[in-house]
Image (cartoon, rainbow, N blue to C red; front, side, top):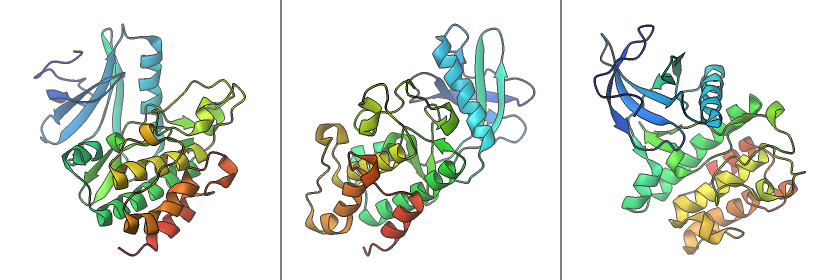
Length: 258
């Protein structure tokens, strides 16, 4: 652990560490309390002895969060480095992780529609900023105060950073097939369109997309009538057959009657 309960972060933004939070493959994540105000914060960090790729990913995530401002994305308050660790502090959002909700049972379809609309708006904002989120999946989202907060920007990329030899970013099952093509693959925001479809399949069907990769078929007839054509177009193997924008997907989903 890079922090222990009761330990303080840097005095520029002093937070007392409360406990470690679950999640975080490359980085450690902690709940902290801002000194004097009592407001809860999230501290995300890695030790200085961590692999260089982990440290660069953390620094990149902090830089990305500094460039975006949206109510469905955590706000960053500071990035710090010392001899033992590097970390950043961001806003804390009370809510339910969508993957954890799925583990307890199905999510109401009306709520799924609201989730999908929120995600479309958030991704549309990111794409307008020239960013590809790259790792959309239920475990990277929480349902907080009747809206979805998108977490973990460790895999996010700006379009100008993407070249033919970019390393894989994402999660198998949710990642678009172009990630797995030859070295001349071209990754665009349409990879997020695919991941949205795979995420909707997980939410609607309750099945892991990895097991059904290639054809996400809904079994409930009513859900199938409302959503199957959306899933098929989002997850078309060839990018030219997918929806061209999140705004278009938003309009289609907004018209669904539940």
